Image 1 (cartoon, rainbow, N blue to C red):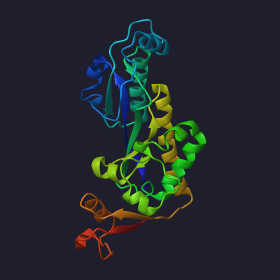
Image 2: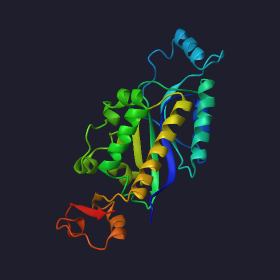
Image 3: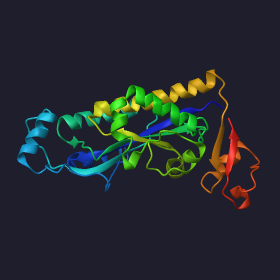
Image 4: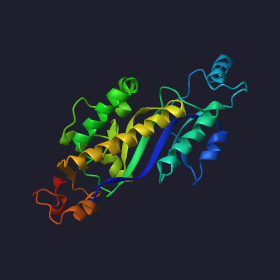
Length: 259
């Protein structure tokens, strides 16, 4: 089966008004939650800052109080649905209902069919994505690559891909265990129309890489940890885990899967 994108979602950190929070926090759109890594602008309560924000958001109205939160979207079936939500954020941004600052990030989640996307969960894809971002979004890459919450790697290895924490530019195994997705954490929050660009870049880069694998017949060997979270999936790929320390034998060594 050829790997393809199944659903798309994202998390947007920033400052929200209570009115916008009430709109977003429902089953149709997603959920709002607190995130201690997100901070309010230091000058939010000062009149001069409010005036500056009004200029930035192109409105003459006094802005409502903004508070730091994180929005987690529902999983969207199509790119159009996802970009429609970002259009809603754009309208909110223009009226001062949403504001971003340097403490906030934009995280894209992607799920796949089959659920375990062997081509994507690899050092080769991580390298491909990183190089594409360095070329197409160099400013964003340089700004975020050393951030503790989304640190990029100069070089990817099978071991690093397998053991990295979730606080990496491309969160693979921790996100897969928790959500069944791959999470792209490298992007900053920005004006929503810019975040739409980041989303389309992510989806386009994934599709380009999958097409490259298909047209060039690229073969890879992927290390998949045989732990409790992934064993049911690996069993659908191969009947036998031939490594002696596999969790099937009460161990923790990775299963090698041929793509």
